[in-house]
Amino acid sequence: MARWIVMALLMAAPLTTTSSAQAAATLQCKYNGRNVQALITNSKDEPRSCTAECVWHYANIPFIGTGGAQLEAGEAKTAYRGTAPRIIERVYSQTLNCDR
Image (cartoon, rainbow, N blue to C red; front, side, top):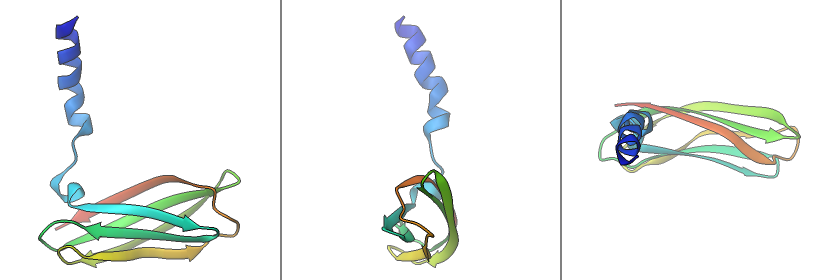
């Protein structure tokens, strides 16, 4: 039984790792009423270029915001800011891709 657990963990390890470019930046998909914002924060000591996509939901209808930013070390920028047609209920998904 213990061997099976160890093997399962070893096989799952590649699925849970992130690339160094991904680990160097974070994405926050924020909302307040109808106002939405995608905020990218660079946490590494080098500049990078990132693109972000946030999907918010209102009444089970998706509202998508995409954008990008050039970030210096430790810098945060808004990649997308917009207004949804109705009050946002939740963040459905988020995607962040970065290059050095």
